[in-house]
View 1: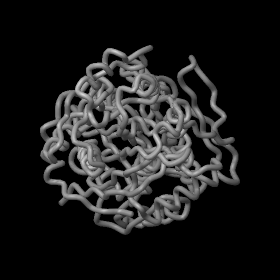
View 2 (view 1 turned 180 degrees about the vertical axis):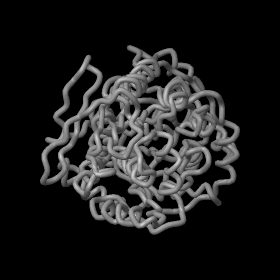
View 3 (view 1 turned 30 degrees about the vertical axis):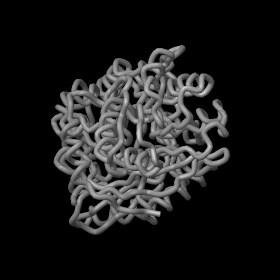
View 4 (view 1 turned 45 degrees about the horizontal axis):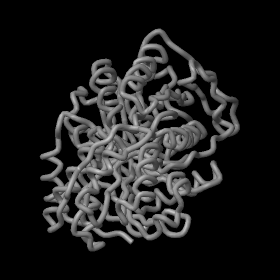
Length: 457
């Protein structure tokens, strides 16, 4: 079911957390299959390039130019900067699949400016340093017009401020949720198709209060995803009458978290909120359970991981709750789920897949509207094609064909995405979205409800 919650408080909390730090999204811990369209060539073990073949036509050949594309006759080239290795490595293949589905649909319905869209893969390794290096390669060597990524806000922000912003390259993150991104120094080249974590922190606190917990502690990954989400949760939980006994940061992928756990559970909290990534969380969750340090856990998008629960034992966490950025319940979203299942043999169960898919459509529509693959022209057209007014267009081959007709006729369009309406404000943030409440039941993660978020109210 879906319900709407008030957001004046969430906005206040978001403003107080707009620190010069950044956050990262979490993962769902499952790898997704790839398609025959992905016949990548690996270079240096970190990057892959693939050009999908439109239905009924031969595959286009990847091309490189000596300068950033600026003309309508050149193919639109998009970089996919995602974590194929590192602590968020579960996300990379699934993000790629969602983006490739959009590319294939667009190419099957005419492409962009008469050319097939090209998608170039780059692995950020869930590392700011590697992410910046790979983003620079996408810009300077591959000459992409836009980059989709990264997943971790801890990667997205340095990429935006040191690579895409200064270089004037469009960047759309499908998964970076830190409130700090709102004020990024990005020259208006950074957008995101997911909603800020200010919303998730409030819902997580409400969920803890609804479950009757009176005291809590948090274990959070030591970046602003973890810090920001932990602080929003703590402030809202205490506003609701609860008490947060400790907020404990941790580094990624340690062999043991015994010291951090001892600090977190010293006051015997009713619940431990695990605000981490799967590779780290499974270590300290195992230690906490085996040592009997705490009985109850709350989870977030970063710890919404089937592999994590399977590794630790589903029965251990039976009935426990979590939150994650979700997608609005719409016909457009349902249609994406169906096409994704048809392409890959399973319905999308990771967060942020619809957002990855939408990012491709936003970039492609903006290039078509601008009549150019020039990054600045694409940026300037994004709000024109994504925000009202205009005739509503949706993703998919039929939606793309209709969008081409309207743009050719000089008509305004308003893209309504699979994840949300994809309306961008002056900071490149989406204004509407959803937070899902999920629960461990049996050997599955089951979404219980979706709470609609509208930051325009």
